[in-house]
Length: 336
Image (spheres, rainbow, N blue to C red):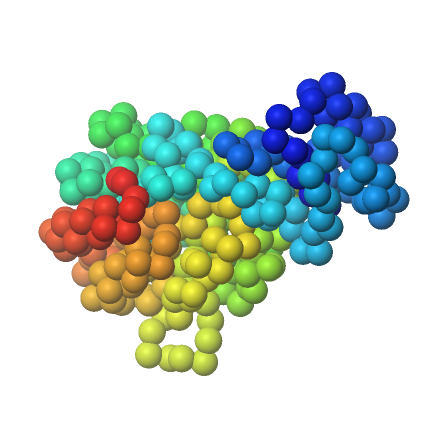
C-alpha cells in the first residue's frame, strides 16, 4: 500500500500518521521528490482502513499495490534510484560501462586489461575471481588470489571493482570489493540474497537464465527487504529455443523493468550472445532501449582466454566500441 501525501502537508499530521502505521507493525518506506511525497507501507496491510487514512488532512490518496515486490516497485519510489559504486553513479541519467576479463588469470593480465579499459573510458573494472562453470573440469578462477589481483589493479588505475560472489562463506573476502555481483545461477539463492541485504554495499544482480521479470524483481526484493537498497539489475540474456547464439538478449526487459521498478538496469551483451561480433550491436540496442550501463568482457588475448574467450573483445575492439557508445549515450540524454 502507498500513501500519497499532500504538498506542504502539516509536519505534525504526517508524524502522527507515521506513528499510527508503525503502531500497526508496518514498516515504512518513504520517497520524497520535488512534487510528491510517498509513504510505502510494507507488511500486512489488510487491517488498514483505507477510508480513514484518506480522510486524514495530510493525505492526498491511498493505493493498494498488488505486485508482490514492494521496495523495488516504482509505485513506492517514483524517481529513479542512483547507486553510488565506489564513486561512480549508475542510474538517474548517469551511464557507466563496466569492463574487464571474464576471469582474472594473472597479475600481468588484469593490470594490462585494467589500464586499457580505463584509457578507453570504462568507469569500473569487472573480473571474475570465483567462477561458476557449467563443467566441473573448467577453470574455476583464482579465488581469493584473484580478489587480491583485482584490488591491486584498482590501486593502479583507480577503477572500482566488480566481481562475483558464490556463497555466504566468502562474504568476509568481499569487504573491500566495491560492487558485489550475484550471477544468474545464484539469482534465487535466497540465503545468499538475505545476507547481502544485511551489508551496505552495491549489489549487481543478474537475471536468471529462465526467470520472469517478476521473479527477477522478487530476488531484488530479498536484498532490499534486508535493508540494502543499493541494487543494480543486470539483464544478461535468457534461455530460449534459439540455438544460433548462447542466450537471447531480452532487450524488451529494459523498458519494462524501467516501468516496473526504480532500480538501475545494466545490460551484459557479452553473455547474452556469447559471440564477440554481436557485442557492439547489442550494446547500442541497450543504450537505445534506455539502459543505465553496460558490462563488457575484455581480454588482452581472447583466443587464449581460460574462460569465455569467444565472447570477449580485445582492447582495440573495446576502444572502438566506446567511440560509438559515448555519442550514443549523450544522444539518448544520459551522461558517462
